Length: 88
Image (tube, rainbow, N blue to C red):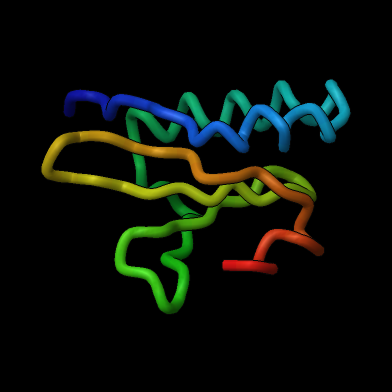
């Protein structure tokens, strides 16, 4: 299986600045693994959206979009679990 191309929304950089470095490494590992397997165990399709999925990384949630046609995976945002689903 060929990997998906990863891209990030501009707001993701801002989200990462708010996260402690000890959590950032685990988050990056999860994101890199998504390129090979975009729907791993634990990935949840978000209600109300056709293409958005969520995966957990500790207390943080990574919300991303999968485009199977062009093999592209776009990270929309990374937030603490208490704030992850506000303003969807």
